[in-house]
Length: 482
Image (cartoon, rainbow, N blue to C red):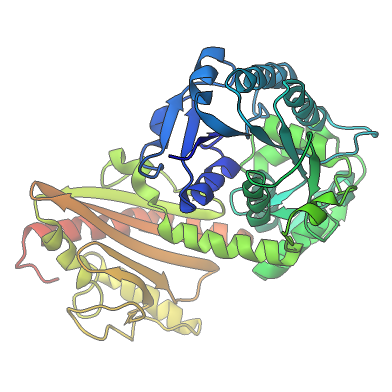
């Protein structure tokens, strides 16, 4: 067997994606995680997770045993205080364990910033961590990046939330500072290439895309691709503390994380040493393509992610207004039925058309009439066949986006909406019974989309809950057809 690759930060944004990339190549990966249960079901066969912490020398020693290369992708940005001390201590212990276990190479992702100029505490700490790892005597390849653009990344989520929610923005002076963003796919390619590249010493590679832009320009490009018109009014008096509190109100960021992020982006973070372009055969994408990829990948992740996994204990009628995944709002509910999976899925396969929607058909007809008045398709189209479905079929005001007989049906809305919407059904189970999951997903466009969601939420509580009850009843009473 090939030597192990140790991956820290596998439950984080970049580490989690790097794990998938390494596993796709058949690399033997060992993950270090404080909560090993969080990795359950995420590792390929033959790979493993070790319980431990970068602050725990004993667990590091166990994790490093038999390791050829180790990724250091952790930091303490979310800590309430003292993150510099924590990061310093963690790097010292990680480097010492790597030296003891004769690890061939450490690969570290740090932050861009002028080493001779002023740095924020966070960026200064990231560069200090790289220096501490080098002092261990183990060869270190350090990559330094600015803004990482990808669905789910900290910076991208901040941009998305601001643009989607605020038609008019009061923007502080730090929104004009230049950065050199890199697409997540390109950052991952650099990290992956760090395993095999032939280098001597402890090189530092500054990585970024071809464009040098400000956060304001990033927001304008995001708005352009989403078809949103946004007015930005620049003011010079919004301090980092006030900015972080503001971000905490209108974005998913915690105020303390937002403060450290703002402290960092107040300083220029651009590539000054282009050696990465000479050493690696990687040509990073520009800002336009990076944002377009992030939006496309979000659609794919939305389709592949099981939204209700973390909500399965709430029963068929959860009392909440939806959870967020990026910009999407999700209303998910489940019900257990005393029926085989095939019987539980049968009423789902017949949904719509002459069968109807198992509850409140008059509401669906009213919604279809309103859609017709707005120039939409309404509910007139019905369905091609009352029993059979195929991907691409029309189904009333929906289109079948994915269909797996006996298991999954996902519908994409084609009605007039201030956003995009999906309705998904999934059935799992065995001879002892089945679990039906029903998930409504809405991707709002701007403030109008958010207002629409919360206006119709009471109808969701009534209609979607009633629909699921009707499906469950039809599954347990096979003679029921409507």
